Amino acid sequence: MQGHILSRYAGWPVIVGAGLAGLMAALELDGPCVLLAPSFTGEGTSSTLAQGGMAAAVGPGDSPASHAEDTLRAGAGLCDPAIVQRITEAGPGAVETLLRLGVPLARDENGQLALHLEAAHSHNRIVFAGGDRSGQVILEHILQQTRKKDTIHWLQTTLEGIHAPDETVQGIWTSAGFIPTQHCILASGGCGGLYQHTTSPLANRGVTLALAARAGATVRDMEFTQFHPTALVTPDQTSRLSLISEAVRGAGAMLRLDDGQRFTKELAPRDVVSRAIAAQLREGRTVFLDGRSLPGEPFSTRFPGITQACRKAGLDPDTQLLPVQPAMHYHMGGLKVDQTGRTTLKGLWACGEVACTGLHGANRLASNSLLEALVCGQWAGRDVNAHKDSSGPLLTSTPQRPTFTTDWPFRAEMQQHLGILRTRTELEKFLELTLPLARQNLCALTASFIGWAALHRPEQRGAHWREDTPGLQPPRHLDLQMNDLPL
Ligand SMILES: Cc1cc2nc3c(=O)[nH]c(=O)nc-3n(C[C@H](O)[C@H](O)[C@H](O)COP(=O)(O)OP(=O)(O)OC[C@H]3O[C@@H](n4cnc5c(N)ncnc54)[C@H](O)[C@@H]3O)c2cc1C
Image 1 (spheres, rainbow, N blue to C red):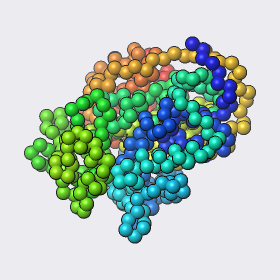
Image 2: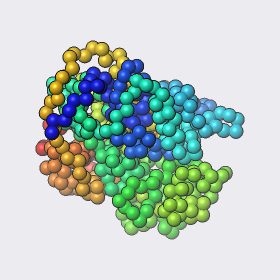
Image 3: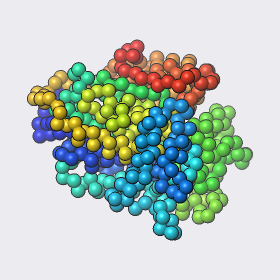
Image 4: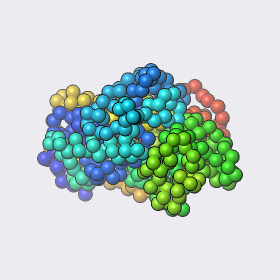
């Protein structure tokens, strides 16, 4: 099917995704633009699910340099120090932006911003709102502000293709038709939905990343998938798992085995805690989070959203142990971008979780992703403003529409072969399933990039842990294009 041309929007910048990164880009753009997403309520975004909050060095005794140091340490040698410095320095300004946009960040009894402590941060530096509903509160307020800007045109649809002959964007296909444009900002989130156990929206399966790669964009460090240590175990293994935020461990909750013993440091980096839990589960043990005697206020008062999720599963966190398991939570890899969010395709920017900026390296420091989504969304918008007048003539007819599939029957296999603890044999088994499909199926293409990169990184670095090849190799990024896969 060719699809008709949406000439009303011809030449306007298009933003794909209405999570935090997309909304911030839309607020920055100074002319008419199209904001394209399947929903404009927060539904389908990871942003609205964020519990802990946003990291920024705004507390007494803290500094962006200390925030940068913690970020670099967590990133296990693969962060880009320049971007780490730039984003951590932008942290205090990002907090001001949230306040300016009317977000009611929590305050302490003295009226100062209240700050949580999270794993591997050396200071209390997580601003939050609505108790443990930070993402929901932030997104609601930013959506309200975005709606006031009448240059933003809301198009409720999905991205289905990127037309980029000669590595230059000339338009995009949506389910509503073709938009001729030379400026597209992808803010379309991560790919957690590829996994059976995930805290991300199930619709986030890396489809837009695969579309960009099909159009010729380079992806970077795809093997780095972060598993959150503590997702609530529920009998239904097909739905998205509820997250029990790191802030709960920051507040004093402990990890225990079925016999009550502790077995790991609760505030060690995420990958360390996830591996410790995965190893216990592999031995057939059950792992619990114990928040029954937190210092200060009880669990249910401090964490009302998590309490609601626990009660839905028939558990009372004030009086009962919570069974937990690790779940795919965040993708550090993604579309390779420079400091302004430009991908390797002219006219295609990426920001938020779909992008690989170099902030997270091999492992994301908790609560750095909302910060990255906010500031990189702004930077991408500003860069489009600065360059949108320098483009050539627009297409006036619709090019041939590509057809792809997006069904994904391999969530369990992804979990089994491409989970926390990896081996060459398991990775090869996985690629045998996905590579034959990856030309046609967009989920298989993204999954194959992750599997191929994991196979070609025989080391234990950050969130990527090859059990068959212990130790570290000299740090290097792994850049891939579609042609690098044996398809
Ligand atoms: C449960 C949970 C808790 C978290 N807690 C925190 C936290 O406390 N602090 C922190 O910093 N980070 C946290 N994170 C991570 C953080 O929320 C995300 O990394 C961040 O919000 C990503 O923002 P984004 O705008 O890039 O993507 P998202 O918010 O996921 O938005 C993506 C948008 O793209 C749209 N989209 C996808 N595909 C298409 C398509 N084909 N066409 C059109 N639109 C499309 C989606 O519908 C959505 O609107 C958490 C993540 C989860 C899952």
